[in-house]
Image (cartoon, rainbow, N blue to C red):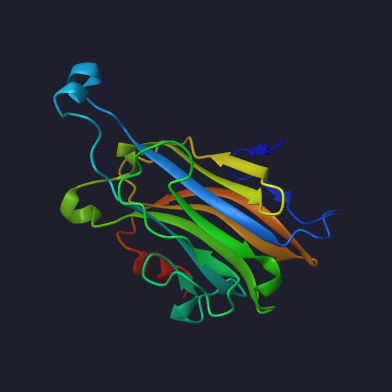
Length: 198
């Protein structure tokens, strides 16, 4: 059974699980519905919000190469250890909206941290922010047996925020750990988030 984390909590992913290497990281969200039943009936449902999940592969907590940003425009890391399965344009439907496949064994030794972020595409022009999103979560699944290891529901009020630093998977003392970050920012595109780690 998955361990449910709160903001700021951390958990060991690989300790005591020697064979754990291949992970599926699922991120999900829903647009906030508006107008109730009749609003939906007459086309007044939730706004069409295009959230994009990305992974920053950091070296000593720093971004050293633009190719280490895995997102809809660069779906696979050079090492093959991080693979984005593709862009979801609406967030409609249940379950994961975007998925990232991680093979810890392929992540180069100099990469110490994988940062999972979500930003709203074209948020300035569309006047959209995370106050228009609900039920946001990130979860980690063991690909070998489909067991959900950890889930983190982002329940803070992110109104006015246009990007979320959701979580991190990082190396420490030879093990991989997961940290529930849940930090909202006013970055308007992935490049702005990357600059935080320059």
